[in-house]
Amino acid sequence: MHTLLNVVAPIFALIGIGYVSARRRWISEEALRGMTDFVFHLAMPALLLRGATTPHPNGGATAFAFFSGCLTAYALALLLSRLVLRMRLAEGGTFALNAAFGNTAMIGVPLVLAAYGPTGLSQLLAIIGLHSLILLPLGTVVAEIGHSAHAPLAGILKATVLSVLRNPIVMAVLLGLVISRSGLELPSLVGRFLDMTGMAGPPLALFCLGASLIAFDARRDWHSALLCTALKLLLMPALVWLMGWVIGLPPLPLAVAVVAAGMPTGANAFFLARRYAAGADRSGATVLLSTVLSLVTLAVLLAVL
Image 1 (cartoon, rainbow, N blue to C red):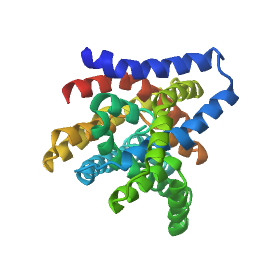
Image 2 (spheres, rainbow, N blue to C red; image 1 turned 60 degrees about the vertical axis):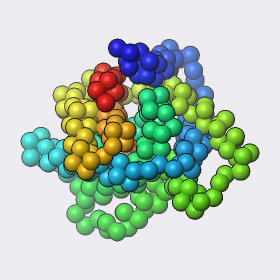
Image 3 (spheres, one colour; image 1 turned 90 degrees about the vertical axis):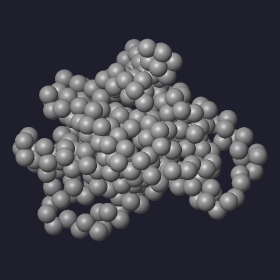
């Protein structure tokens, strides 16, 4: 109960306030778009750049445990969609992406900061830096193969990687890692700017996330969406914990990796599904269901870990 009240409840309260504000039209679409752009292009990159310039020992091992479990969950979900649910490959690919692609930035960053502080955030950054860079190209390639067996995979992969590299959040993490590895130190003026700007990121990101949930409808394809939610919130954390235990990951990095694995489905999975017209309704329902149900599952994970 202490974990729920002091870490999880304030985060989901902000999400709920954002949802109610958008539902009751207390905030206009133009204002929400501006707030979201500020979060995505400035506040969160500033926070992550600042965090990435601090040392994060065992970051490689944390990322290895996370992505081993993540890609295993993706593969199992893809097999399930094809062999049991009889989905087309493009639709099965988005189903698998829903089960593996988590909201590691908008929910993961504030949650890990609240639970584990800057030390925990430094471990999470090792995951965020590769998260979109690995999963979005993978999802795109599978969707393209599903639409055309003769798709030029090398060209698709190159274009997708370039698109991901233009993501301000990914670029902030990569730039921070370069600065950290080079031994350079940020000027104090730059550090204070990043601190001040980054502080606005987590709460505003949670508000914008809640406001965006009104676009999703959990009544559409809710049976398969609930199954996908179970894979994301239950199976993937279990797989990441197992891999972390096998490689002997220390308690804090293990906890961060498992909590990151327990994040609800990220909206980028929905956008990819809509782009390829492959299970977009199911993907939207999964985003909404997993976000709501993660209130319980994340509280349990934090209490256990």
